[in-house]
Length: 201
Image (cartoon, rainbow, N blue to C red):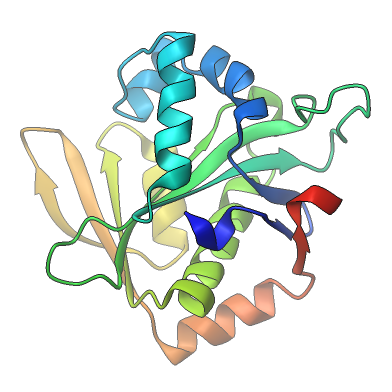
């Protein structure tokens, strides 16, 4: 998506950076994990297919993807791919045929060392804040596997409400509407947000 192609958003615990070619090798290693494949309802891809997927998503105006960099593990200057700090990703999908302001949102914290530290909640809050302010989002939808109790709890804490359950996919569907109260809450919880250009990171 052009809107985040050169954008870095820095919070207290993390940086969100656009998903670029240099991130693909480590992302591909993550997606060899059966646990992550199941949690994200994904199919395993070859490295070549992963590069093609990254290019497709980067150019797709209905998909917005950021890689999460854990600030507790600063990138080594000798590793321009930022792999030392890569922790996961956060995504938006604009797939609603009737309303272009509705986005499906999902998150993956792939690195065990970066879990249970508040990165997921901060990344989601930043993504929601960005989507409302810059992409005119009015509602967010989350589809979560019914055995993914950590994610179910996380989205509930962020204010998402369960609206349906898919027996076929064994998914809980949750929604969050954008309100003035939500925006005030995000502003209060994200006082240190800083926007930068990716090339100057």
